[in-house]
Image (cartoon, rainbow, N blue to C red; front, side):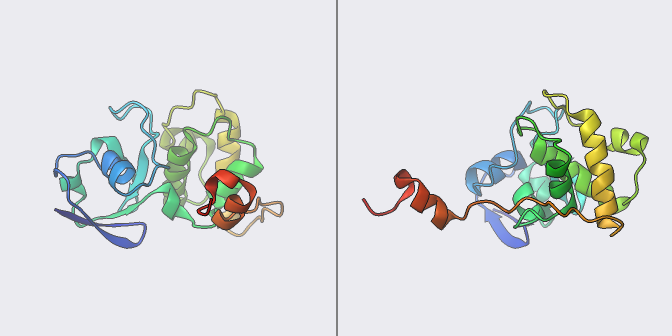
Length: 179
């Protein structure tokens, strides 16, 4: 058994301690925002915060995560109000979205260390691969998120958090519990 804190909640995983954290999060905790991309630490799609550091969860075992604090994209902000999430949308730095959770986690870790990073610092810190090539917009989004974090700017047209589960069930009959 492996005990750790995931998104501010204590969690006990009853899995092989050598299981990659990625699979424990996705398969056992149903936190599917953490993506499987390459499995060898190259792409960054599986990035999570572990004790505040952005790490590739495909390279961290449950045993290595024992007793640590893990934050996934689902825990970064429950209502999508984190400056990075808001700026990625506002700057249209999201295309297909597959790499976005890992990039958002890496950017959040960078801004926690330095809320005013240069373009070079952003490029050095965000080593995630994006098949859609949003890199120029990504740099602008992270710089903007830094300004929001420093309270030098506000994103006034921030997107709403989205549809609630209840509204989704009402709008999509297949999601209703009753026949």
